Structure formats: structure tokens, C-alpha cells
Image (cartoon, rainbow, N blue to C red; front, top):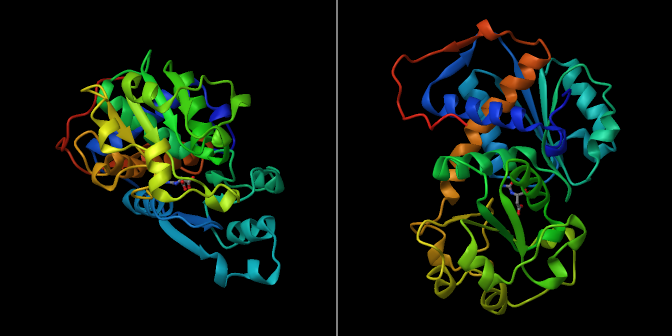
Length: 314
Ligand code: NCD
């Protein structure tokens, strides 16, 4: 795989390799013994993804370069391609890009001589989010096969829903959708449950925010949406004892989830954020290795003591 763009391009073996690598980064410190620059080009708002890429880069010893789109030459009409070429010319060794267009990578057209990592493409793909969600699920259940995973909310406009449904079903889970009928996408081919069915049957309930910036006209009062389509305290009580709650963030408290459930016992929302750092370290090193920018012997283990238990091999 040349660039890290879509879950579609990943084989099950590659996904498992990345999850195992993430687990090594969680349990040990590693550093790359070469000066390298990672450019973070975010043309859409981001807190978790951007900051966890920066932390991942710093932990590996890479130097992050940050573009503030509002203050950059994009405002003077520069294209994404020319911006990317500029970062390549000034010495970036890897580009991390988030952009509102579904197919922004087509503009780069494989003309760059450094790897590109997708940190979010329109409504289409968010492969590193899917990896961190899969890692969080594996941490909990140590398997994917036959797990019932329901993605609830604005499936139609969510790149997280698309990438996750594809990755988790590749790994053997049963994936379902639930939510307001106007926000479902039957063309994706996953079974649609009522929220009450989903709450009772799911091992993993993944909630999504309404993607207001990607569509207009779906306006519900928060309380009305929560009662109809959100995870209320009453519904949470009907979940199976072992079931967990995920959410990629940002959370709209009191809309898709009752505020008191964001940090409840079965919520893994903040674990997902922590895991984002490890999976992004795994993706960054894999791309740098694939491109021959670094070699295995340049990734140095810094600690000798295992700090945390590794999870069982995948
Ligand atoms: C998601 C995104 O940007 O697609 N957030 C994230 O990356 N953690 C989900 C969202 O914005 O709703």
C-alpha cells in the first residue's frame, strides 16, 4: 500500500499487524533515531485526531510541522497539491492530511515522493479512527468474531460509520446501524435495528454526533433527539452487563448521549482517545518503513521494563 488512505486498501493481516504494533507502542517506548519532519495539514476542525497525531509524532521523535489553514497561502488560492508539494520541498518526510472533500487524495495523484496519511476525508474515510476503535474493542473482548456492534446516529454523513463498518466486518464482527430514518444509508448494505433492539443486543454501541456541517435541514431539539434516538439513562440500563459504549468524539452531551453516561462505567470514550496515539504511532512507522525512509534498526526501544500488560496476540 503506497499511501494510507482507506480501510478498503487494508487486508485483515495488515490491520492485525497495525493493532499489534499499536499494542507494542502502548507497552513500551520507542524512538526513531533519525531527524524527520511530519507535516500536519488539517483543513477541517480537529481536536483528538490532530493532537494525537502530534503526540504520536513527538513520542517517536519526529518533529511535527503544523499548518494553520486560516493563516496559510490556501487563503491566497493555493491548491492542496501545491501546499503538499511545498511541505515536501521544505523537508517534510510524511504528510498527515484532513480535508472536507471525499476524494482530496486524487488531487495529489501519487505525484509526491513522501507518504500521505488520511486523517479524515469528507464523509468517506477515517481509517486511523477505525483502527483505534478496533484496538479499543480488542482490548475489551480479545476478539472480533461474532461480536454484535451497532453504529448509532448520523450514519449517512459520517466517515467514521463507513470506515468502521468496513473494518469491523472485515475482522469478523456483525455490524448494524440504528438511528433516525433520514440519517441511515441503506445502500451500504448493513442491517438496520431499532434503537431498543440495538441497546439489548449489542456488545459494542458506538454513538455518533449529528454531522451538522455536512447537511442542513435535520434540526431536532436536543431533548427530543435524545429521547427518540439517543442513549438515555433508561436505555443504558437495558444494555448487557459486559457491553461497552464508544464515541469518536466530539460528543454533543444531551443530544446523542445523556451527559451522565459520557464517563459511566461502560464508557470507553477516553480510552479511545488514548489509543489514538498508539495506533497513529503504528501507522506513521509503517508508512516510513514501507517507503524506505527508515529501517527497522532505526526504531530504538527506549525502556527495558514492560510498563503495562500487552494484550493477547490477535
Ligand atoms: C470524527 C471526525 O472528525 O470524523 N471525530 C474524530 O476524528 N475523532 C467524528 C465527528 O466529527 O463527529
